[in-house]
Length: 167
Image (cartoon, rainbow, N blue to C red; front, side, top):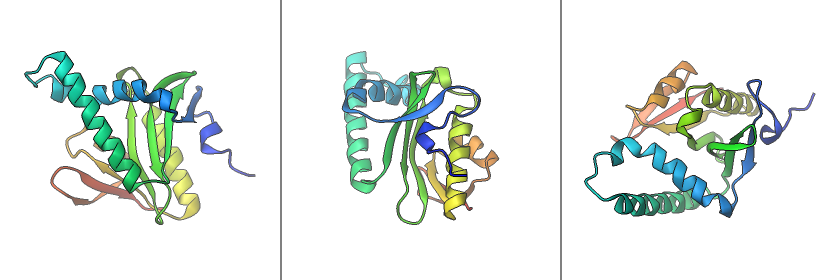
């Protein structure tokens, strides 16, 4: 039986899907990115407008880097019941499945959505016989998820930890 394409398969008993990123999604991506930096920004002694400008600049630099380093990556918006809930950026070239970016809005965290996405990616990688690799914040909450899913630490650059799960 042929596998249902990743972006058309409902997961974890709810309408969890991926759809391709569109340029009109930029405001959503900016809001999502801001949630991932909220703890850090809480300590910045700047007015809100300056924080917002800084985050827009940082997101722009990050997206430029991703486009240059992973030009073939699938850039998708995670939706739950038709509502934008997060982002998944995955590169399937180079003999690996590289999770470049995975993020969910706070209201969707801790509900098994990240686990469902990662489990599906791991199944796809196993079918292809390639490892899943990603960079994780060594102090971040997601690292625990990756360890529970069987990822191991491969190296660290002092800021991020390269983790992998072999097929």
